Length: 198
Image (cartoon, rainbow, N blue to C red; front, side):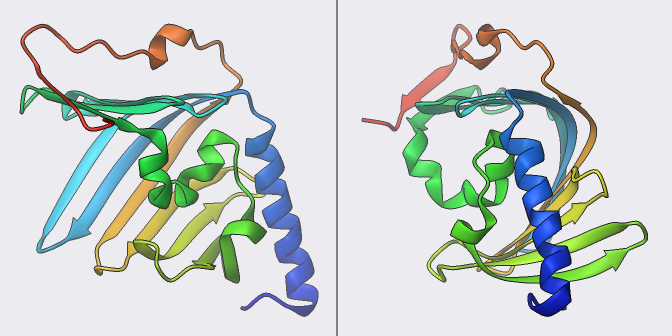
């Protein structure tokens, strides 16, 4: 179903509900499974995600153990213990891929980011596929699985290359206490540290 008519009204309710659910949260904690399929391979990672406004997030991986992806709102830090390497880049340089996950940071505005929506019922939930306004982004569409309480349970990003990145979220905790120290990154001793923000 494409946006329009009475379907448009129901869709508007879903989109507005999702925006309000996440945009009003100050902190968020959720377990995630991340699956990448493309170029003849499939990789599945798991972990815990912590978020705090504005723009702070910590992807703490249990599989592969020890891997980190942290944002302090200004910089993004990534650490891969298997490569003994950490990197820093400017937050704004990751802007292209931020729109699909903008709801996590409380910056979701469907009308600003997407031009077309398609819906498909999935039992009591709703699958919403959103087509971005710009065709110059690295992804062609994003599909959300939304429950009646406006919680996003999965997110699939189809990249222009044909690859697919999918997240499933479980055990969401809204506004838990999360210390600022969770969003600071100090490279472990002996790790190769590359600053790409300069």
